[in-house]
Length: 386
Image (cartoon, rainbow, N blue to C red):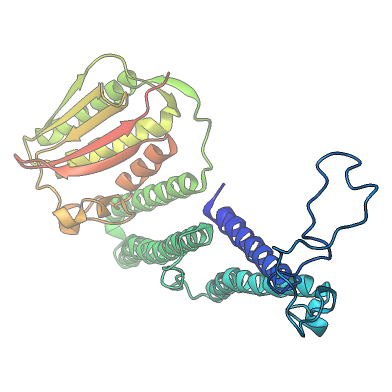
């Protein structure tokens, strides 16, 4: 039973108790009242001690020890009640109980109708686009399910506002990212018309920018599918050891071009349940991001193990790059965010965002921290398959 139930219960119980008390007091006030020494006639007689006693005798007069009726005192049968007239009516207790019940019902209705009216107004404001509407200040003095509902409403509006802000930011970033290669393509076409002899050179530039646009659109589609939950089956039994081996092999081949190296350390078997392609892409995005920020001759380390305390599988990817400013450690997982844009000319800021969506889709999480010796370490945690 929740707090709201107990509020209803105790208010109605209190109403019944007050009504009962009022009826009892009314009945007590309406009782007959007799003068001292007077009561029903012959109440002073001793009751028979055995059956038949006094049956053949006349009723005896009061003994001399009994108090006599004072001169001028009316007999008890004619003595008036404590209350008179309409107040002796049997409808009085019912009327008193009805009034008390009506009062408590009105107070209870007002107590619950007020926050409901506030919530109705808040929903109407949100429907009109006022996403800064909050119910927390209005219900701060309540401690029941309606207050919890107000907190849920505030979380909902916070989430809606964040999604709309992210959508606006995404549209802005997409238009910015696409505008630059499109401008270069248009410039290359114009130059090719004026200088046909440079067709081969400009053709390579056109091809490169076209690939960039294709890659951007592909990552955007992947991110949109992950946000919408439109992914393939996620119930495959996967050994992450194999996936990490493939990622490390490809990354090491790419790292050789800049004199870097990739190390892989795997402890035990790492069974998970999910989608192999998505998990491969999630880890690959982190490793490629580490390679992109590593200096020439740097080293990227991939370590995977099972956490004995939680039973989760932990994958850590660390590099020897410049790291990330502390205030941006959470923001780097937002789409199109780049801590140092000048240092990442080939990136769009979507890789880590996709990794976070994939981790959440598999019941895991991902976070980043700066290393004490320099560089960034990104940790991916996934639940181990039973």
